[in-house]
Image 1 (spheres, rainbow, N blue to C red):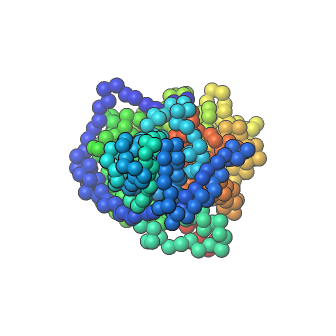
Image 2: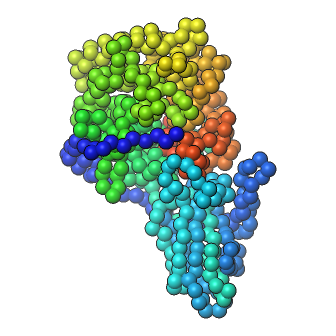
Length: 529
């Protein structure tokens, strides 16, 4: 089902001073030339998996020529984000017609086996990474203007003429990122799988750190608040680029909905523009993101300046999103709260828990700033919301929280109630272990939700179990070939897509980068790995 928001005559409120601060913090991107490592072929095995075979070393390329119907696949050895160039040179008789080429870019090998003509998803097919090109003058130095996210590049010769063929030379990618890998110390665990998880996490984060923290470098290539919160946490343990987090916070605060609501995502090019999508949980996460930033950087000035916007998001929810029972109004299939992409997931109880969770961060910030009235007010509101959650969502018979009119049981609801601390630590531990035993039908499908599952396990004192679950989930992704971690990974359905087709799934996605945060903050610092 398509999930998007559109507001007619959308009006925004702009704080130019905030936008100016964000503009002053725009990073200069580092560039690095990356060349392909080998030539490959890709085929599908009987299990519908893509299998890569080495075809030739790059040193063999000058001896090869390509005519109509020929194709060649370049393996760059790792995931890249950047701008591709190559030179096409004719061989044979003098060329008497343009060369007509198709380029296809893939983050994982299976994308090379897909035909874009078969695409039937609800996201725009323009996200599919392919292009065609006519070369009227040969030799031709080609510099593709679009930025691509890929490991594999396929060039197919759609046509030349019978009189000539092409050789391909000087193939490279100008890789771009706001950060450099060499500033991050290796994890150096005795467990090599954890080291690999850490490296892939950092590469995922690095690739997504562009002019802002992008959610995905293939798609959507914009700033989403839910992703930002997790990226920033991973960044504090690795690159420590505080200015980029600060820039993103000021962008969200600098252009809001007319009523003060913070948008779910933000476009940063060609000009600054908040999207007309509001997600309750994402807007609320502005506060925790600001609080995390202050605690990591010590930047009191930014905390003071953006504190009112963070508090306003809670006030808006309290005033407009609750019914007379003080539970969140269920808006059904409307795209009003994210939590996870799980098919049929009801968001009501989870949204209630997110509101409680963010109030704890509001109190932390209010304590720093000495805002006693806010502390008193928020503590009272938290107790009201917790009592309402227990009265309306706790099912004593099942020993689980339910959500919506159909009293749905899901993983997401249990996890967020634990993170909201509706129960004490021991009862939360009982709940998460019981949830694992029951294994609700509405499962987690994104690394975003799995991060919160890990967070909940650690909150319950189940550190060893969290580590095993990390290995099982992100480790399995690595075994399935991940160079960077993916937007969606359902071990029960590895071809799942929330968009109607996996052709537009993102395989380098910001919200999946958090193993490096968890490993470094909760395990390495405590000497547990």
